[in-house]
Length: 161
Image 1 (cartoon, rainbow, N blue to C red):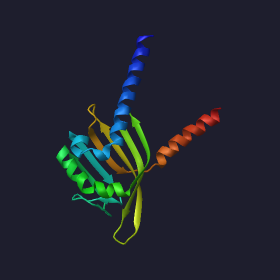
Image 2: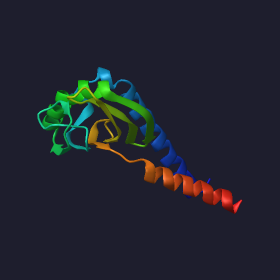
Image 3: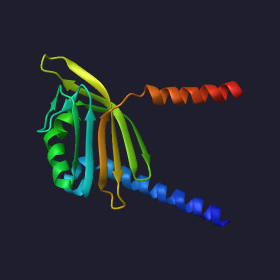
Image 4: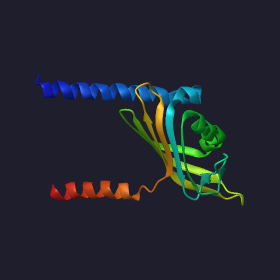
């Protein structure tokens, strides 16, 4: 076995181990406290368009564009919105690569006039080697560009066959 083969094998083993650690954390996230989930220097970003959350908590029909740093500030934002956010969130896809996780889904928000508005959201989490979230971003996402790239790549392969 060459040195390059050994390095590839070790890299794959590290990624597999990281994925298993993150899957275990995600499966038990409701049993863990924010202190157990968040790194001390976590950076939380929330970028939501029409459906969002205000700075004091609670999901509302407002635009949200906030970023907080540190476990205490992130906990404050997450504690004030998590129950309502979780009720309205339906995760459809999850991708884990090493210590990075992307969850895609739909967030439904009850508007004051009794309408329910749904937006596509993505949640990105970067974990450190101790399994704590060091970066977390929640944003509304437009999946059309990604879909277009994948479709164009598939059509290019089919055309060249």
